[in-house]
Image (cartoon, rainbow, N blue to C red; front, side, top):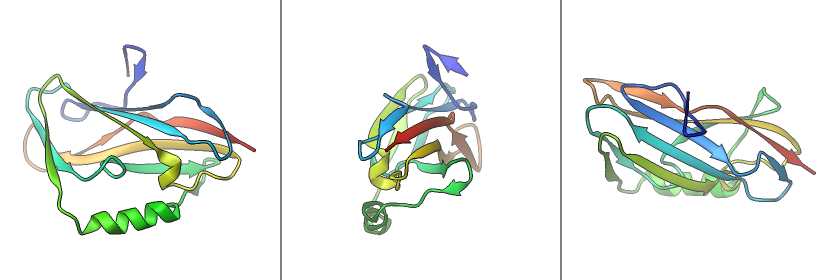
Length: 146
């Protein structure tokens, strides 16, 4: 789904997730700035725990379409540090968006030259009823050069 030249994942209970990068071709060692937008197009407020910009979302990252990309040392240390911390609650009103930017290759090891595919997702309490829904972004590809 495209809205205002932005590509979105499938809507789940009125919630949408979009990811993008400024440049899909990156020289090795350069930062890969990931932009994430969570949008509430539903009729109800969306409420979920806020962890940190680094781990508000989970990521599926594959190298050359079949190898799961692991966390960097920084990512491993950071995820252990936040797993025991307190969390704030974020509420998103109908029609509102939350924007996040982070250097995804600080969290995940994208140091090998080649193609990486990436999607983000977030499980949230279902704003339309009981249970949880999994909001999944669009998928993007990033080519890392030597």
